[in-house]
Length: 242
Ligand code: IPE
Ligand code: IPE
Ligand code: MG
Image 1 (cartoon, protein in one colour):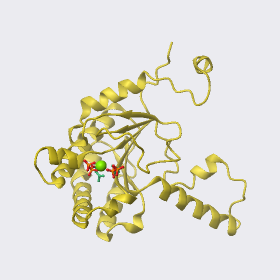
Image 2: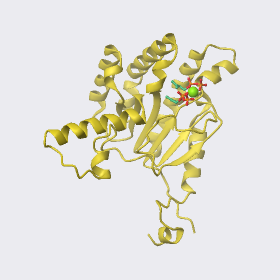
Image 3: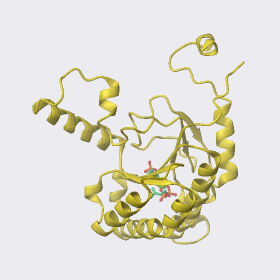
């Protein structure tokens, strides 16, 4: 019998398809981003109620800085507004809010709003909601390698680096690796997301565009995950004995 994994501890989502959602309705791309915020709210509330420990959302990649400047500035402004709007809901639902990514690249006002929300919610004990902002997997591995190298040079680390020690240099240190990664919009690629952390993550791809992705389909993804058997390189028989 295939063992059920029940609930994933960490679900991560590559929220894709906002632009196509808008285009299909003859609207500007930005309307898709606005509607996408509604999906974020719905999925976050559902994840918190379901008892998921970590929900991370890929909101803006390192490569997304190369989009037209009005889209980039619109997204940064939308991020700031959303952080301010959602703070009461974070408190009400006992959600801890965090942002992971290259903070130095963010507009200073946005960074200030993010840091205030992080501080206000830091003692909340329910779901940890992580917004991956100005993030990429290669950026993360590089910043970890640079900090590790600096620690070796200063004598704070030795050269016997193992996987756990390397993970502690990643921007996701202390957060368990994703159990389930969902990508919407029909694209089946990793797009420079958590490259190290997704080594044994289960992937779930759906054609649904992010603004249409709501709790019913999220629940279906969780059910699909629960039917899978993760083996981590071992045999099926070994896993059944565990
Ligand atoms: C995802 O939707 C949001 C971001 C990457 C910021 P897209 O904006 O990529 O939408 P499509 O893929 O063009 O439809
Ligand atoms: C991935 O979506 C990044 C985010 C969802 C934030 P993209 O739309 O940027 O990915 P590609 O360019 O289609 O691979
Ligand atoms: Mg896209």
